[in-house]
Length: 134
Ligand code: HEC
Ligand code: HEC
Ligand code: HEC
Image 1 (cartoon, helix red, strand yellow):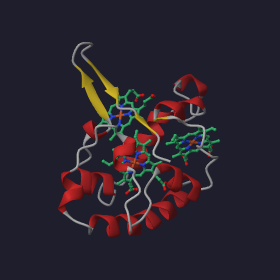
Image 2: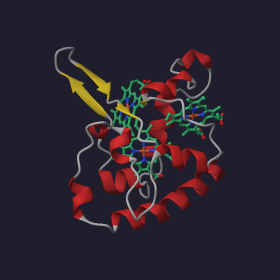
Image 3: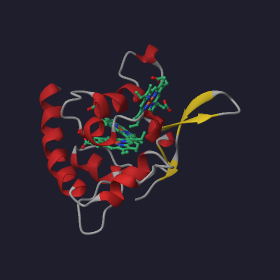
Image 4: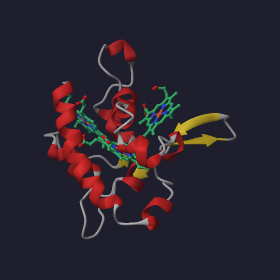
């Protein structure tokens, strides 16, 4: 498990180093649709769409997903009682573990609000959703 994650991180690091060398316009972006606003296909650079990253780790096809991350939870559990890592744990861990070298922390400040937004009327934080970009 550990080893697999480290392997993946290695290959991602290379890709992001290339993307991030691209410049300030990228850093100034906001991410109104969460996952799909950041995991995009950057012309002439690496393809960071989730469909591509996931297929590289041998993940089942996500062709039938329409809204991200909403439809991810068709397969991934959100109920801790199931005894497996729930979807939020999987996603939080990817973006926050080993903070010293995790690009989400070092480059994006680990900002919760890239993925979450506050619903002022409900007084509750929510996860942003967006139409798939593949
Ligand atoms: C603002 C940018 C940003 C947003 C928003 C974002 N991610 Fe990420 N994501 C990253 C970065 C950076 C990494 C690489 C982290 C690392 O250093 O391992 C990553 C890695 C991943 C990976 C690992 C891919 C692999 O090859 O193992 C998955 C899966 C993922 N993100 C899913 C999501 C999902 C689902 C959402 C929305 C709930 C999301 N991301 C939102 C920046 C983002
Ligand atoms: C059709 C069902 C299905 C859908 C839809 C799906 N997944 Fe998965 N996912 C799986 C299966 C099966 C695994 C392998 C589980 C395992 O390794 O225990 C997996 C594993 C993963 C892993 C690796 C977990 C780990 O701990 O190594 C990540 C990350 C992931 N999925 C993210 C996503 C994201 C993001 C989406 C939505 C864009 C998504 N999945 C949609 C079935 C699905
Ligand atoms: C990369 C995207 C991403 C980032 C960054 C992120 N979250 Fe989440 N968060 C998610 C997703 C995806 C879920 C699960 C949504 C679902 O189950 O439908 C979630 C769920 C949650 C929940 C609901 C309870 C749970 O764990 O299931 C809390 C609380 C939460 N996040 C807090 C935070 C805080 C605090 C931060 C910042 C330190 C943060 N999140 C950063 C994607 C993210």
